[in-house]
Length: 413
Image (cartoon, rainbow, N blue to C red; front, side):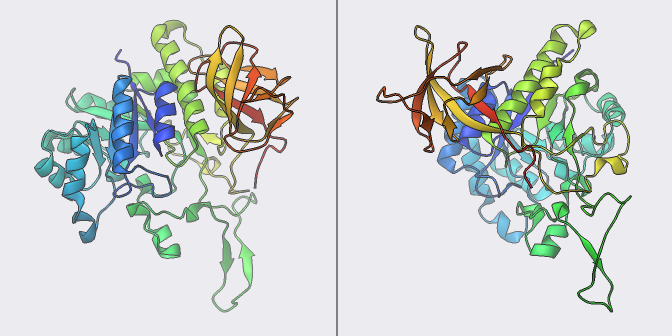
């Protein structure tokens, strides 16, 4: 059985580095133009160079998204951008538009091309079509079942790689091709500026009764009629591995570095445990618990086991479940004294109970019983953003370990 690639989102340079450190085999990132996530920080050319170099230094890959549906003006500077991306050593370009495909082939004929899920790849013949044009990988539409993906795998050339999303936010529209944001806010979702009106609360108004808003109900559960649950497939690693997918993709370039680290870490451990001993594999329940500790909506398996029913929508609220805060990041650790140097990310004080997350290891919990500032003076609280302080650790830690703390309120509206 081939080992599938674990592909992680990188919304900025910090997220890219954390994704790699916590177990991603590859990352996907976008520049300030041509990608579908303008809400993320994205990368300047210099940051992209640094990020790609960092990934390569760790033996990992970096793919650049150029997957907008372009208009004429988008094409003017695209050849220069593609040339720059090639020059910095990107491992592939992710695209969905035939025009962009043609430009990449003209400007960077040796560049590896991945066909985005935005291209609505729902059958083996379209996958074969892209392969014959020169694509190395096709990202499956989110509307496919595992059975359909397996059939595509059987019918396309063995050298064509197949990729699919296994975790993250779902879109109510077909493979993300949506005009609702354009209509409601004049922000083009297909050029990266989606306002996410699918997460809004809706009412019904009758034409001749302006101002009289009637709630929209579905089974009396609420009015967020377009609001999908999040995808989570960690309980189905064996089925994913047997489907013939080459790459397991995590959504979330707009999410936090803590989110990316935690999700990647959980899937890394689950995939490795399965591949080590498929016959005796059982998911560690702590890994599923980890995915409850990041910002998320209720989870679903999407289309993988059949078409979703009404249970895949959230009708009561448009909010996320946020039960934990990241409160610090380990910058250094002294093995002789057991003291860690921490960079503060949220207010932290004596008596707080924290959990420590590290790459490839189970988390551990401890209470903070002693704190010192960088001058060695005892303190009771670290109140300032990015303040550097020191605490003794209950167990050894590595640089870039994450300190998190449970929120008092479990759901933020």
